[in-house]
Length: 416
Image (spheres, rainbow, N blue to C red):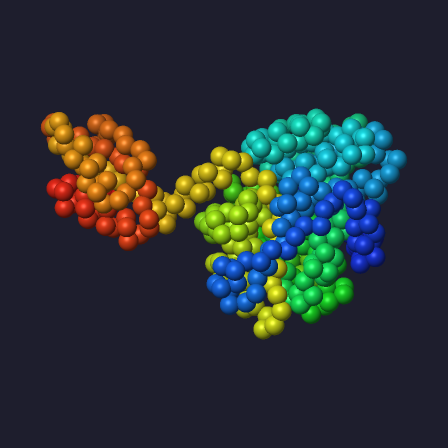
């Protein structure tokens, strides 16, 4: 995916005054998202941590800021319609902005795009095309569609108007957090972190701006070392919103000038961050939006500044109910609040009832039970059952297993 911008000229268009203009143009549509306290994260980090809740932005992510800025910049040139390629958040934002401006909109998304995001795009009145395996494929097809139909292509990140729009997050942080010392930002193509970094460090150069990518798709560090965008293979990731194979020409230049550091996190760390935000902060945050929290929990960030506040930007909250349930279920299993056991029992009347009675006496809650007669080396007079139990944590799970063995069921295997 090659950038459509001319880098030197585009870089000159991204500055504090342009960011302030973009913010003013979006007033009344873009909401000022709250900065929320995070006691659990502060305790773990040994520093004051706040959360910038862009997951509560209109369309569920920061992307609305850049889309509105670009539509305003296009003016009458958008009369034949606009087109974009996206994993979902940019698509929703462009569709929303186009509807607000009365402009036709077409959206290209990868075939495996989350259903919730695809449905949201159609609900906003855009024409949806599901095609290609990645965000880069979707962007390339959108660019071709724009050439064929004379429509205006809106790049998801490598565009000065879009970057300036995203920079509104940085201006809000300067106003909301007077003792701001560090901002931690999810990084896909680099539009959000570029806008924030320029907005914040133009006025307060001492503030650190740290980017976070997911290991399954992390081209920025190599691109910065090379001095030009470097493409990487992308693996399947729950952080689909930042699964961009290569940063943009413009955003890479801006990141090289303004961003302090870039770190990576893995899938398990992202999943745990999503659950912690749900349990402790009561916030629904998608994988891409949770990578900053994941980096803090996994101690991937540099040591915190001695004074001042660290803000973690939660860039989006567009996660399907199925994905959220799967992440929560997985967490419960890893925390051993959900115990899965396979138990061999004599195939005789009353033996399953006796097993369940022992489990009940130990205080565990039975969620599911299945007979298993195939695929195991069972005696002719033996069967097996797989049990899913709810416990109070690791100690209680161990006590439940001990109670099962004390009742005479010694062939109990934990499934993880």
